[in-house]
Image 1 (cartoon, helix red, strand yellow):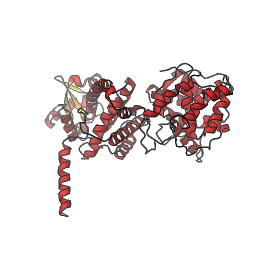
Image 2: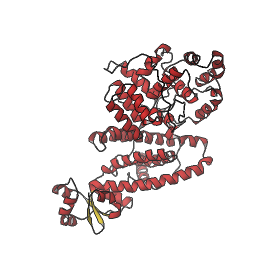
Image 3: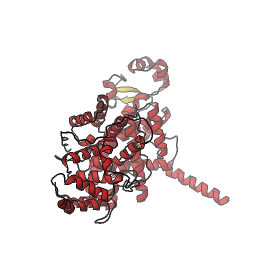
Image 4: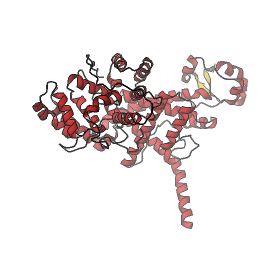
Length: 509
């Protein structure tokens, strides 16, 4: 017993010293971590934060930010993933450490392009806003001091003296509310957004900002610092790329990575019948695969990108190797490819995808992020994500031809305009299956198919679509270039490299 007490005492003292590293669980992430961590911890931290930011994005579009349901759902996710929830209330060193390190890992992963940087900043800002709004008045002051923002709260006497002016210049406040709220004295140049919309009282080049609005000023400061830090990270990453270990480079590809079930493990292998593919493409294929299937039926051919994307998807939904060879051959010989040419030029690559040739790797179907962020389609291609790569007007026409209601099309196009491509696909699922809430976060085309089949076979009332094959007279227009999971899957760099090496087997157009 004596030994146990000593052990607990040492642990507590060590924890106190460690706590000096993160005196506040909310931060601007100004100092990068310097400690050594294992690759396993590195990957787990990054995956958990990526999951969290995906939830932040999804909730931000699905619910009013700041609403009770938005806050309760986000709180549950933060707790589940073991990130700090309320600053200085939950003194959890491990959670704060994870929050700090994971931010910097994803900062390196998402600094590599303008689109990635914009997405990362938006989600981090929304997460920060939620956490900041959970602070009480005392904690706000402590945080402002911690990040060196000298916005001191005015005294009670000053507030009483300026009560009339504060009430008249701050919309939505009552006299009682003015007495309850803290007001901060902020230099005018840092409160210009509030000044422009006349939401703040000015006196002697200072703005008197209520606690309810101080978050806007803090967020602007955070955005500025984070944008500059991402620019520095970009230069660092490009300068250091050649020195990084290949394994570490793959870890920094989290922006392309998928976190979910491995759909190369075919639990339903052989249960898909070739004669049912046309009907399934209408009822249960995501728009990207439905588009590829229709293009294949219309043109009797797909170019390299389309064959890879669609072929691996079909493999993932249960098509056997023998079925795949029969499916592609029967379609191609209807066009300009005879049987002998198919056997010599295309059959090898199909067997390769099933792990029967080359390095015998069991290739995984492409995730949404891989489809969105890599290998954009060019003229004559039909692969890629229709929500990301299609012209909005062509996308609108396609959705109209699929009998999506006008209000639904408007909602989808708004999500596309905001670059929420996966959420647009979720809305497409919702509209084609006539459900109000799909109940999952969409990250993979094969997940779309599995959830659709589960829904359609579960006895719930859904909107039925025609099961006839899509054989319209007009061919689809070309595109212009431009989860309930627990298994962390990092981006498969070696597999991607070998897939690129298959180009020699796809030289036929």
